[in-house]
Length: 249
Image (cartoon, rainbow, N blue to C red; front, side, top):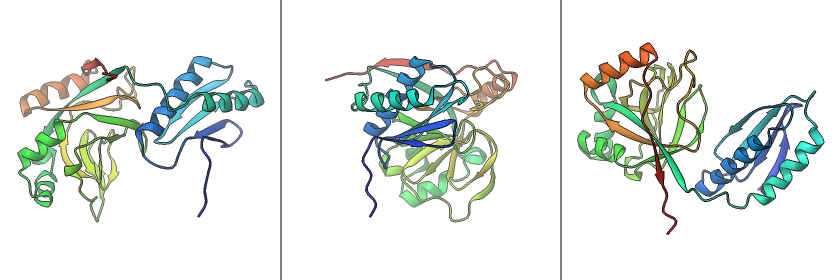
């Protein structure tokens, strides 16, 4: 069994350095990733191109012809040591995701309900009653990996993945839930659809959701779905984002 000490700094080509904080999906680990990302962006060192967080690591992309690479690596090591367990969250940013559940917009909802021995209405209630944390974006531009879903909704992925899943599909895969940002293959179970465009290259910002934000699914009916869908297509829709103070008690 291979054992690693964390945090550790890895080279990923001549223009990327990766800081790893663990090997599991864990809020404490992810908070350290988020804290390091914020610290690196504040440095704004010459040649910084992007920071990309995952569940357990942060990739920092830079221009090797501009960046003092040795200095960057030393600074990253210092920041990792100083990061502790990550700064305690004092303000929680919650994005509301309007969602039409079931029917042709959530073709797997009844199957999920059957597997869990719940009514479809109860699945919707449990799915929309708990805020979920966005650990990371990946797989496709803007696809969200959300943790914190009600554990009673855990279901296995499909044995035979679909070749194409519509953009906006809200799905459950194992212990996670997520939103498909563009048409793509996938094996998660589809329980609803949001009329929001989770990724739109024509828009600024192209992606509304960021790692470290919280997601609150809001059940809607077809009439509201159609209205938001039209606004999203026109590029005028902006989601509601709430900033909530986090109790430290």
